[in-house]
Length: 196
Image (tube, rainbow, N blue to C red; front, side, top):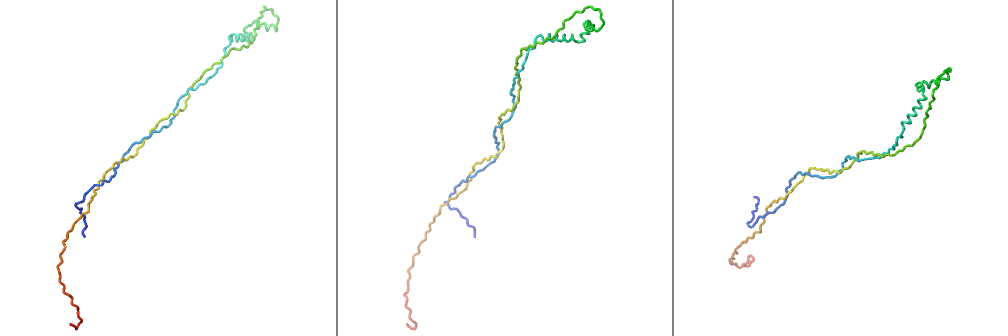
């Protein structure tokens, strides 16, 4: 059989239905975040310490006393006697034969005298300073960036045709036929055979 094709009636109308879909396009986007980290630096701090020195005055006439003591020791030294023959002759004379000599003048021998003198002392405070290195924490903002994929979508209207028809009403007119009169013969009763 041939395929059946429906033909829209004349009272059909076509409308449009809209189907909304999306079209999306990917794109690369650079995303950055900032965080604070601590870094270390070197700074110098002044560190000082006081040192106390005790300073005493040198006694006056120190060189004069030392010179007098040195001279007293030199007089008892044999070398001193060699430098002064008259003094040596006077000491060795009793051991030799009596000899007439001129009288020798006697000299006074100096003796050292010790005197203890406590001289004035004073304290002198001196401040010694140095630049001492130390670690210093410094906050620094660090930016981290990376690439991510972003998708942008937009709506798209897709039109779909829609057909709407109304039912068709048809009217059929049929003409009625007139009946013709008929005559009917009366039925005669049937007789038994052999009679009539």
